[in-house]
Every structure is written in C-alpha cells, then in structure tokens.
Length: 72
Image (cartoon, rainbow, N blue to C red; front, side, top):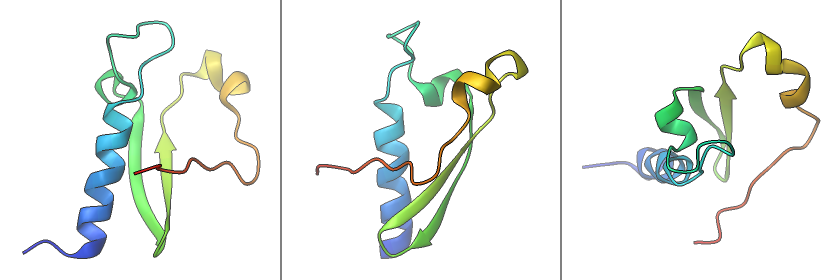
C-alpha cells in the first residue's frame, strides 16, 4: 500500500509531466531530463531540483520563496 507521502510525490511528478518545455511544447520538462529530484519538505511542500545547463543558469537562477500551487 502507498503512503500519503508517496502518493503526494507521485502527484508532483504527474504535475511536472504536464509542464511543457517553453521552446518545444510537445515535450514536458520531465521528458527533457532537467529534473534532478523531488523531495518532501513538509506535509504540504516539496523541493524540486533542476539540472540547468551552464549557459542558462543566470536565466533560471532561483529567487527566495518560489512556489507553485497544485489547483487539484
């Protein structure tokens, strides 16, 4: 049986599967292979880590308190 935490992480991966690459919209960011890790932080928050190519790091530099809410 799957735990609530495992189900939540599965849901995060499903959402990430639906996020299209901005330049190639038929490919998700998960399919692109830039997602490194999804890690639970609290009962209602996760951290998503990306592998960003060196040439794009300035454009993708994170800022404090980035978050995305799942409307489902």
